[in-house]
Amino acid sequence: MGLDYYEILHVGRGVSDEELKKAYRKLALRWHPDKNPTNKQEAEVRFKQICEAYEILIDPLKRSIYNEYGEEGLKLGHQASSSPKPGQNSSERAGFRPRNAEDIFAEFFGSQNFDFGPMWHAASMRFQSYSGDGGSSTGSFGGPRRHQQNYRSFDGGMPNYPASKSTPVENKLPCSLEELYTGSTRKMKISRRVIDPSTREARTETEILVITVKPGWKAGTKVTFPGMGNDIVFVIDEKPHEVYKRDANDLVAELRVPLADALAGSSINLESLDGRDIVVPMEDVVIKPGDEFVVANEGMPISKDPGKKGNLRIICQVAFPEELTDQQRETLRQIFG
Image 1 (cartoon, rainbow, N blue to C red):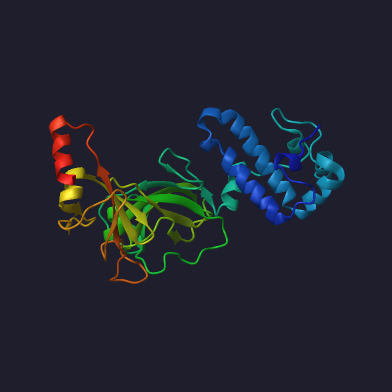
Image 2: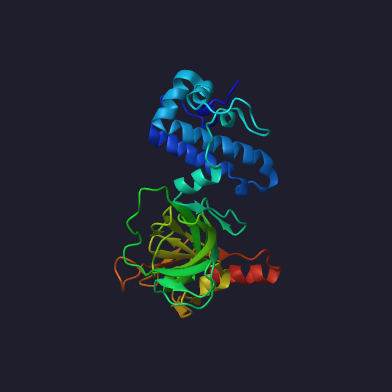
């Protein structure tokens, strides 16, 4: 029995071209041999079958023949030699020769032979943080002819470039709360294998994407670099902070205040995210557990309203002593009657 191309792609016979492309995209990325180094032999077989099935079903004539006559119909429709050569499959013996699976993959994903390396792994490219020198202008520089490196920059404004219709490749861009408070410049290095359509030779291209993180950006903010087969989307991911938590544009700090300071008065001392000392006097205040104090304009910058900030909210938890001596108890009774 021949291959069931519909079953290979997990689609029904009434599948549309758009659904067919989505199915192929998902399975080809999943079973690409470079993405399955520990199971490469099985991946190579499946990857070849997936590409062959897509090649048949996306072609109206081949799909029509296959629907009516099955794989045998494809053989009969492409008669060739009747004496098979060693190693040929049934389709190849009949004259139907599927294209190289990598060629189909490269054509589908914008003439790219993807590198599924161990760095910051994405569906189509390799990412890594980059700390080398270089400006933000676009252009190529350095390296031999077969190794090209470029810069592209995003310097804020609207966080999203116009996206293409291709499926975007999203990757998290971890940022500390300090970086989101003051702003920062991040560089991400992309490496990918590109096939020259004229020579069919593969070369390595690297590109440095320069991202200017604006003060006040929130987790989930997206920065899109279009093109290169798939749009590249970086999604801001906020790292946890040991003192502050973010609540929209506010900063929240939960502090433990010793009982003596809560009753007798003291001051709250914090370091801001840009390194300044924040002193909140509490000499004339009796602090109760759960009390919240608000310091205006000491929160996160508001990215859509430059120059303005949210508030700093300090939530106090009173630290009661674990035990008291008899003398301390007696003193407290005298003080509080």
